[in-house]
Length: 157
Image (tube, one colour):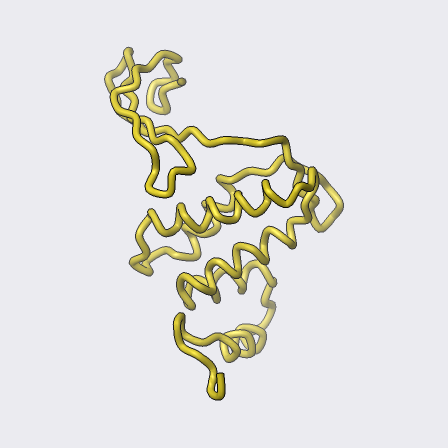
């Protein structure tokens, strides 16, 4: 594994353990050149899945893109990294078990929105504002008006 600090391509695994949800192996590594320590994750990939973008372009499914978007939406919300990883793993699992070799980015976006809706209402609104491309404050206001705090039920539910 290439060192992210010095780019040397030899490192030793110092510790391996499964993640909390048993969907990956977390490995602590040490570079044999500069001595820096870093963490890697090993995950199962069932098959190559292509994401169909809104412009009909295609690109390989990339878990880290989802992870970056969710981390950004959850920034400064006090949400444990473990819960974010569980949400991202859940979306990845849904994509992989769909049985499709191509999946529209819109479907993935909706999966992420549903996960965020259950996790944190502010993160949900943040993600939706970018995902749904709000162009005016009114768009944001209307959407936010439909959101209830996590765990809170609508009147009459």
